[in-house]
Length: 327
Image 1 (tube, helix red, strand yellow):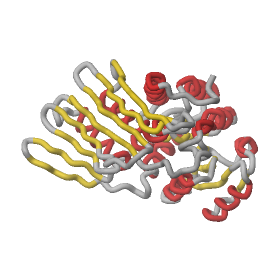
Image 2: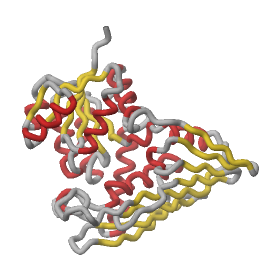
Image 3: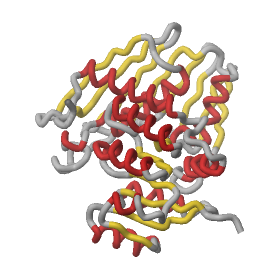
Image 4: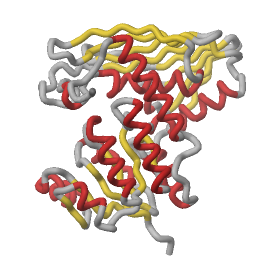
């Protein structure tokens, strides 16, 4: 019988619940531990999913020897420190995006992964979405000619959240750009690479939280128009347009269940259903890497996370987005 990979959950919130639901669909995965700053929350989560070990202290989990890899799903500002501590204990890390609040944090995480020969991957789950993988293959193969224009948005109404929530509390790295703007930026980077120039503008809450950001990524022979916001809903459909055709990712595009190809005056729709909530696909990649004793994924590498953090930093600098804890 194949040995199961033992997972620990760090931060038992709503995202972690969806993630664990998908973990339970993976035959060689076992959720063995959960940690929270609140032992009560940890026990509640453990009871809900039949998790054997609970911890009210993250460090105790990392030193327990009970897990092979942890999924970090805390607010953004805790990602770096928790990742580093897990890696220092030789534990693999799948860290929710953004992996770090800024590029220096991601650099520290990557360096720690290399120093301790421990697996590290940013949980950019959309990279492993079957529809997005297929669209990238079609673009790379030239099926829509030369890519000239990309549009991607991600927005929802979030102003009804409390000012102490992760969306609106600057001390928790609040705002749209790190939480959801990262997705449109990721898609442009995935399909077009690093832009030559970035133009961007933001609107802010009275407490300093960035609420909506529009961006143009300018490439040598293409442009991307990107948007994220917490002030209203948007269609969340991605358009990828080339000289010979167009591709559309189904809304909500970052976890699309299919795509549409428009070419030669014909429109063809293709369905690529997700397994579970869609986290299943990135979990398989983590397991593959762990079994092959890799410290990073070929599909979403350390360098990819460093590049993405650089793009986020650039947008933030242009728009004047900062957090109180940053020096």
